[in-house]
Length: 214
Image (tube, rainbow, N blue to C red):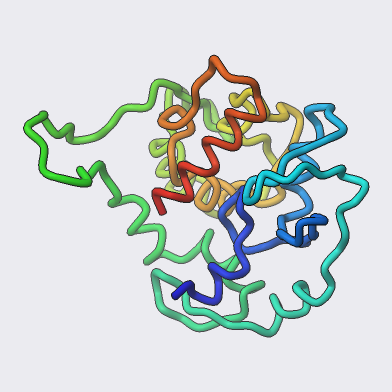
């Protein structure tokens, strides 16, 4: 059975809803996630869950769900502390126990294999820290560096991982970059993306594959 938090999770960012909105097909997303998708300049978009087409003009606010985010409670997967979903969304970026589990996550085979198991799977893309001059960090290295060196920074910065994606906006600054990094980049896009496909197909496959892996 899905946890309370999982029932209020955006299919795109895999995080608890922030300013949730509803499509005509009744599926709910974070407003910002849909607006980012709309910047690709197409009138019709596709729901990542049911594949129905929708127009951004038909998206509706969901005040009932927003109220429930301040009422419904769930426990942090790291420290097990119980809190409202709105509080939990912010808490995940600073919970020491949760960040420790993210840091310790490494490659694990889904079944026995005769192939050599790497000690760590390298990412084909590297990124620069948006706070300092640190360069050539893979996605996991960027998370570890930022949580260690910039844990208390509240400066609005552009996410280098998102900016590197075909659908990314190089001018979009994250209000809470550390939270964004820990919740939206737990998987490597390179693992799922086929750059021979168009942008919508790439984004949908990356999102679906990451959901299947969680």
